[in-house]
Length: 110
Length: 114
Image (cartoon, rainbow over all chains, first blue to last red; front, side, top):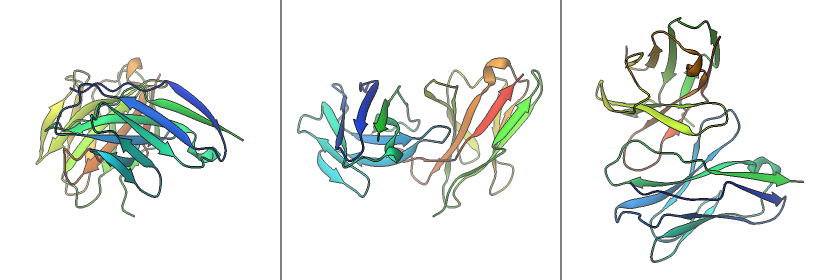
């Protein structure tokens, strides 16, 4: 089971780009890297997933280097509403239950 | 956009009482899950359900818990005799394809056991 490690918390200001790095040194060949966002008192929400290189959608970008031992979630020009907990997960490999870690608590200040 | 809906949004109960939390998964999804999150702690997996049977369960999901899909739309979590430590947010989730890593979560049901 690939363990992921990410910072406990980060602070930013509105309009800045935020990069949250996750390390997953023993990620399995079949695993994808998946990021979820959770606002207070709400369920987690899938935001992006990737296997290698770069993936971009309307919410974020995900960078995964060739060795896949780490990944970086990039949130462009954050706003106050991006204040949330962000979870990095290794998913796939036949497992059905997602395992959430402690996540990174992002606080965006005005 | 289709979504997972959960009821009630908040339930307060006395210790020892039975509680049923209800979920309506997204209609074309076949895999269902319950997770819980104690205040300030991690989101913890409880159970997954497919084809009218439990696929996987965690250590938390003991004999006090049960799940059921009583009809074609609802998916319920029953806690037979609640304990103080069952106080948490309970999230239902569904997906059309497991192993994709993309689950669709509901807004949660907050259970408070007094």
